[in-house]
Structures are given as C-alpha cells and as structure tokens.
Image 1 (tube, rainbow, N blue to C red):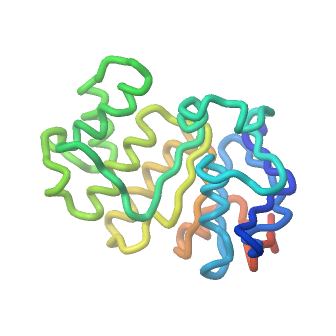
Image 2: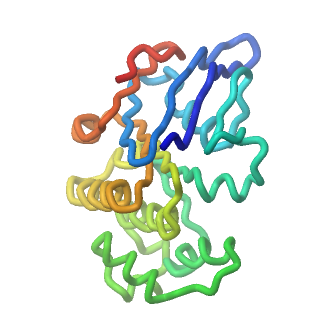
Length: 215
C-alpha cells in the first residue's frame, strides 16, 4: 500500500536550488535509507516530508491527499520526525511520554509508558527521572519512544544514531525494526552509518539536490 508520494518536488531559497525534481513513493513497511554528501539536501528533504518546510514545486501526498490539506497536528501524528539532537521538554521522562497522550486527548497510561521504556532497555523508575540527568543515548531513546508510543504511518529519522555508542545504536535499531515489522511503520532514514545503509530495503541517493539513485 502506498503511504507517501513525492511528485516533482523542488525547493529553492532565493536563487539557490536546494532540491530539484525529486520523485518516489513510500510503501507500508518500507525501510528506506537516504544517503549522499553533506549539504546535498537530505535533511531538507525530510523537513519537507515532515511538513516543516513547503516545497517550491511539486506535491507531497499522504494516502492520496496533499499534506497541506491535512490539519497539521493530524499530519504530524502520521508522519513523525526524529532528529539527531533530541529535544526533550518538561522536567521528567514522564512529561515527554505523557505528551503523545495529551495531544490525542487521551488519559496517560503509565503501564504503557513503562512497557515502552522496557522495549529500549530503560527501567520503570526512569518515568520519574529528570531529563537533565539522562545521557545522550538515553535522551535519544526517550525521544524515539515519544514518536512511537502511537505508531505513525511514516517515521523520519535524521541521523539519529550519530554520536551514539554501539549499545545505544543497537537498542534504537532493534526498536525501529520492530515497529517496521510488527506495525508496518515505513521508515525513511538519513544516515552515513554503514549498518543502517545495509539494513535498508531501498536506497535513495541525493547528490547536488537531485535524486541520483533509487532502487
């Protein structure tokens, strides 16, 4: 099933063309890696798909409907974006895991949050742990759980494993792969990590703002 369609996507700032003529489709359970040199437009592409930027040309559609026609909050529930430097808020881990419930006007379920923590090797008492006391790897794990407590249709990952040690990388990889296999979440990951590249079922290469390889 096609979840996401990019048609003739271009993005320009002033006289500078960042992306030009990007075309591809994303199917349920896709695991897509986006590679290319630094400055080639990879992260800009993810921000466009996330609805954080507006294409200069072309259309991005989710389930056959242009992203601009969605309520922004509803769109971002289905197309979730995770970045290299996780932005945690509030005081505790619980504040961050409560947020996905609040924006859906649902009652926070601590037992569900605890089960999610366990899935990334964090104990139950971390619910009350101050976010300022978390290591970089722990912060990234909590940020990913915030994205996945209610599985989106599409998960966008912008170099989330950069700077993490091997243990934290493996924990993140395992949980993301589980959501991909069990929940059908399509994953688009910008990365330079060889393991993440080899684990993709499709590879898209962006060079100079153009899609050079798609397979």
